[in-house]
Amino acid sequence: GREGGVHVCSIVGAEEDVYTGSRGGTTRRTRLMLQPLGRMRGLEEETIPGSSSPPLITSLAFDDQGTLWVAGYDGVLRGYDYEQTDANDQPLMLRQTRADHTVNVNSPILSVSIRDEIGCGVMTTLSRGVLLFSLEDGHILAEWNPFVTSKRGEYARSAMIVQTDEPQPFEQEDDGNCNDSTETVVPSPHWSVVVGGSKGTLYQRCLGIHSRTGFISERTPLMDNTDGDDDSTMGTRIRPNHLGPIVAMDSPSPGLLVTGSHDGTMRVWDCSLYRTDEDEDDEDDDDDDEDDDD
Image (cartoon, rainbow, N blue to C red; front, side):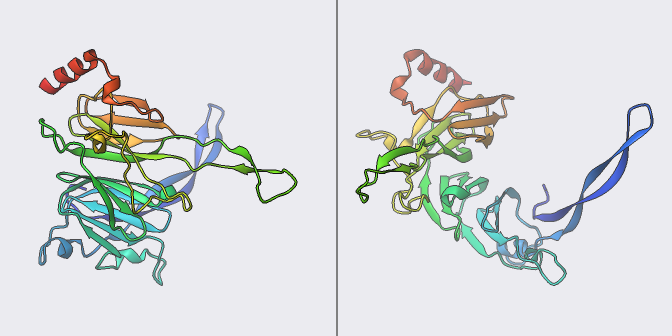
């Protein structure tokens, strides 16, 4: 809420009769309601010792390992175990005065998104761009800011990790078998991070994935999209721009990305194909210049 802090509720249901049609028939349905359980403690002291005002919470994300990630405008990412309960079967995190994981990035956090498949999360910050973090303990894996040279004062507003392809299994000969048998091999999928800016610009960059574990590589989490280019670390720009801040992202299937912007539009992108700025013609560049002037 605007007052800051985190409120926890449970979803409860009550069955009720619902009239159907004009002949007096009824059917049973479950009416869902939110039942308040309490407010998470300790956020005020973690922000400013002695303060009674909790930080503004900008994003919440649950992972499959039982951690609730709480991002704040105070620049702190906190992780709480949401699966443990007390003797009264209430969430234990309501009684905690400290988070299980605390990461101070020293810049207001604007959004958080996670990908359990590769054990990685991504957050956008006001001044540091995009930060990749481990779902194991929250430690920062990599930092990337494609807007660092922006002349319009643009910053990273939202980001998401997207699976860029759907690997197709293939048959290969089994070298360890003398019967010329084959085995089915399923390649690992490719992943990338897409970031949307406060002025509507989109960038995409490949992620390094460990070939054996399928998790993000801690040695080379970010890959260059091009070779031999001084600007390769900036990533690939996705065109055309939105005309306002990109505030929402979702990926319903591999290679597909949906973005929502303050310009009132929702767009669907094919992220399985990489395009560089060199592939764009002069007309696209002129259009972008007009957008910059706006």
